[in-house]
Amino acid sequence: MSSTELAREALPQRIKRKVKNALGPWGVFLEGFVRHPVMVGSIVPSSRFVIRKMLAPVDWDNCKLFVEYGPGVGTFCQPVLDRLPRDGMLLVIDTNPDFIEYLRRTITDSRFVAVLGSAADVEDIVKAHGHEKADYVLSGLPFSTLPDGVGPAIAAATHRVIRKGGAFLVYQFTPRARDFMARHFKRIDSGLEVINVPPCCMYWGWKDED
Ligand SMILES: C[S@@+](CC[C@H](N)C(=O)[O-])C[C@H]1O[C@@H](n2cnc3c(N)ncnc32)[C@H](O)[C@@H]1O
Image (tube, rainbow, N blue to C red):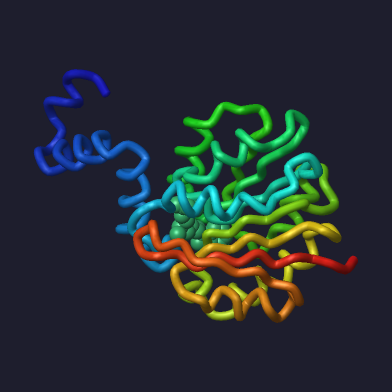
């Protein structure tokens, strides 16, 4: 922004921009929540305790494609990239253009791809990026507040896209996410992380069959 533009900027706008800059990624996330509360479904990003527990069961040596739904401002992205093999890919899908723009600007790792779109289209998105199947899919989607029919469609598409032996990793504030998974995944491990705002339910749905 030039000095003339800065001088012309209205005071409330200036205050909003300063607060957002001071908050860093939290400011971008909060703004996303204020604009799209139902789609974002949370006021703060996940804690590092949730991140560590959710990713613990992943077999990283056999992970070539890791997909994440609803990355928001990328709370999980760097921890996933830190664990992913050098020839792996992290493909993230979010419906919010502001989050996708932020992620493309701030994460420069060549293994990282951010797609503006819906998780319901995961199969086409995975194919468009040169893969038949995903090894793991992680979801921070607010399943219980998504528009009618979207949650079941996402759960079904996710089950189809995961390879045998892979898993669907889901974290949410209500246990309802498990109901969406249970229609497709026969074996589901579960956990709870209380050091998070609010406490977080965690599920790992394993795909044992082709
Ligand atoms: C609770 S926030 C995710 C928070 C973030 N992953 C974290 O750990 O802090 C939910 C995210 O899901 C995104 N979202 C909602 N519906 C979606 C859909 N159908 N496909 C992909 N992303 C979606 C929202 O834009 C938002 O970024």
